[in-house]
Length: 457
Image (cartoon, rainbow, N blue to C red; front, side, top):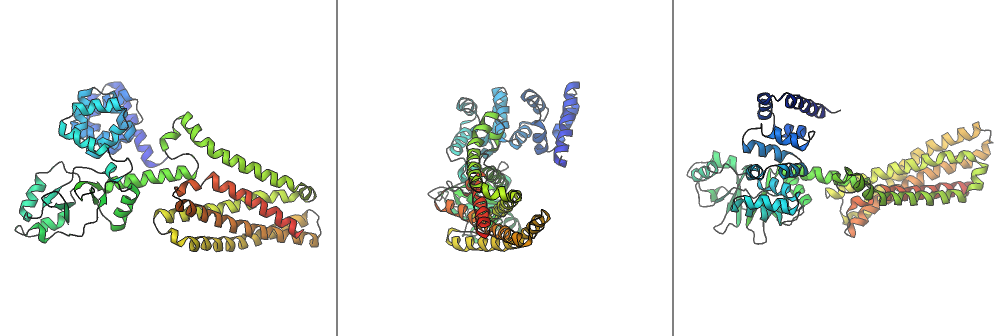
């Protein structure tokens, strides 16, 4: 078990013992001294009733809000839903807008509406504005609490604005706006505090601001933050009005979510980790993909049965089927991972389709030749050991080597071409992986193997 999981379990065990003893003072010390993220990881191991009880020992509403925000959105929603309305509203009012929007988005409409109706109108309106954006867009993950200043301010005046804005999330950058709140420039907090007090902001700001639109996909936002090493990126609407900011912590969440989604898709297990928790959802999500694998396996079995006369004469040939298919599948998985990763990072583009595919074809062929020589040698030794004549074994060994080389070359080509094709037609390349590709490679591998053996024999 990883160290972090061990620590979470120990913290949870300690809190559980203290709850049984009703040692409120000791619980309060732990809840006020432990980092909110660590508390959140431990709280998910408790039933809802115990979570609510432990949260009461965390101190201020702001402290409790930090812990709720550190929970997965679905778990935070369960917590708020089970609390008394007054307490849930007090915690919600202390949360950053983007975190609260995520949590309320996991509640049913009635429960979310009840909490927002009890919140102050200004905060409720801000949350409603956030929730109208797409879940996976810049607008959906941004924080509306962004620090904006006028270009006509002096540095001394701007510093006072920063000092009087304690609720702004991560003011590493100061965004400069016109009188109509249009984004006009940006400067760093470091620039501000190291400049002369009488220097005007307009003389320091960079007018070439990299920003994203509210409807920009969250993956593109993550790429921009990564490309330019930003700590935050401003979000504007269609009129270039500054409406929020996406910070690096939000981007880390996006990268984790997208990576999880792609891994699940590659495995043919859906696109949401929560789906794997429910037995029914897991079954419904994964069954169609496994039908594809079953169908491919049946096709491969029909291909093998077509060569049963050859197998009855050289039974040992059957022992090499999993070797060739396994190696073809492995090289295909490697090519697939490389190409999908390249598409995600924009290193592989559709304009480089033939270059990418031909590169993987050559790599697959070279690897196939290497392992084909090894397999041919092993096949030679095994058939000779069974008592076959050397001259009779030579074509079989050659067939094994050629089949391995061809199967690995074709597998690498298919695995490289499919995600590029899907990207070209507007389908997420991740869905081309897992059972779909491996089944295709299995069928092709069997066809190549037996046709090569039949040809040389």
